[in-house]
Length: 382
Image 1: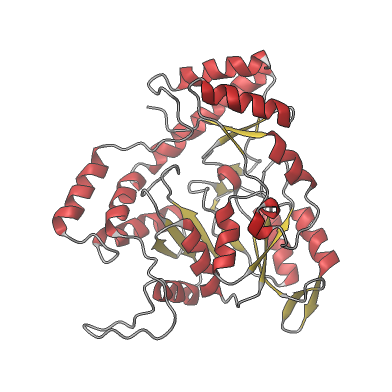
Image 2 (image 1 turned 90 degrees about the vertical axis):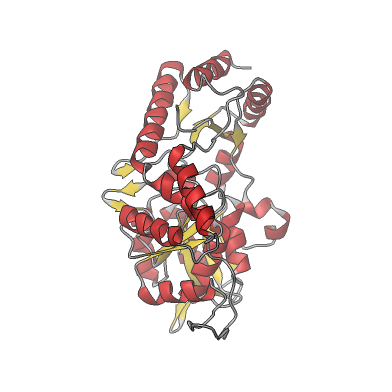
């Protein structure tokens, strides 16, 4: 194995001297989480009707600048509900990226949509504006009632880029393309709480977006998600259908449409509320870690993916680029066998059994990155 990558393991262990083995991304809890959990349990309000749900949503709204924040059980459910609330109809296509976590595609499918996969940029790992523009020009036609895929005959409902590992994609360019084609923009911002493009938090560029608070995220609720939107009707619809579509009434149970029981429980929100109280420290700590990786990489000839100009990344998971797939496999085997958890980027969505027949454009960059991207430990350092 490349001796530089051997030295990288020693460097990682020096960053996390108290962790053995060193996890990829472990949650960090302090006394407030225990205090708020105890308060939640003592109150007996542990379901979604508890006060910590509202407190957590309010903190997320204040931090991101979104008008509405609706807490959900997880990010996949948030994508499903966001799409339905925004108006997706069964069979509609949603253009997304092939290089993403499976929840992006699953959320589309659960909502009744059909994912369409296009390429990403090598430097952001997120949807490529040029690939989007080319795909639309070659495959989509505008009609009076919207855009249609000439090859499949299906209506194209929206474009959904993902901010990979907390690195903002070229969302402003993507938004401009969506406006040109009159296609709604919906952001998968699941990994990017704490990421800004200029002064705007990710998730505020489209009509709606989602966040994730899974156990390995910078801010965790154990399991959880959030819908963000500045659109009042979408917010109202999302809250309603994710709460079993029950009409408000003091005692009567009347549900006026198909709904889901997808709201975040109070007990999870209590953890998230405590985590959000120190969000600035969490992001600062993670950005400092990313800077240390970058400095080490420059000295040792190893490339780490870094934020684009005018963006401020949360650096959820630091990602490095290795020479080829063989070196990737060798490093993954060696590091995981020697007390440092690392992982490859995801298998492309169109290679998975349930999406092998999905419509896809050229994926040159995605294929190149699939063989070369490795995530290294990125927990908050204590």
